[in-house]
Image: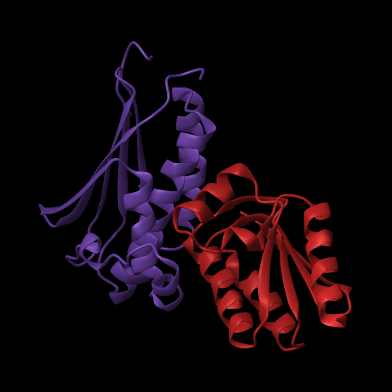
Length: 122
Length: 146
C-alpha cells in the first residue's frame, strides 16, 4: 500500500495538499508530515485535493480533522476537493466537515476563493 | 443472488503488515463473491479499523499470536464476518466515540475507528470465547451484478 503526497502553494497563502494512493495507518505518516510542514507556513486556506485518493481509514481522516482544528483556531478553513464517491461517503457518515467546505471540482473551489478574496478587499 | 455460500478465511499476524495481507485477501474474496464496490469498501474499512486496533493496542503488550477473519456471503445476500484475535481480553465496542465532529477531533484513534465499524455494518456484537476476542458482524450487501 503506497501513498505519495504533493504539496504546493496555489496562490499566495493558499496551499494545496494532494495525496495519491491509499491512506491508512501504515501510510498516513507521510501525509501528516506534509500537513505539519504546511501549517508551519500559516496558510489562510488549506485545500486537500483528494482526486487520487482511492481509500481512507480513520487514521487519514484524523489528520485532516487535525488540520481543520488547527486552521479553525487561527480563524481559517480547510477545504476538500475532488472526493471520490467511496471516500466522500466516509466523510458524510461522520459529518467530518461542513458541506460548504467540500467542493466537487476546481471551478467551484476557484469561485469560492475569488469570493473570499473579494470580500477581503472590501 | 449467489446460489451457494462463498467463504474465505484470512489469518493475519500481529504486525501492521497485517493490513496489506487483509487488502490482498479481501480483494480475492471480492472477486470470488462479486461484491459491489460500495460493499467491498465498507467491509474493508470496518476490518481495517479492527486490525489497526488489534495491532496498535491488543498485541502491543506482546501477548497474542494473530488475527483470524472468516467471511461468508450467504445466498440471501447477507455477508457474515467473524473477526477474532488472541490478544488480552478487550471489548472495543464498549469504547466507541459518537461520530460527531467535535468528539472526533478529540477522540483516540481507536474509539474513532470503532465508530466506523458500527456505521459500516448492520449488526456488530462482541464476545470472549476460548481465549479469543470475537466480533461478529453482519452486512446486507447488494445483489451480485447490481
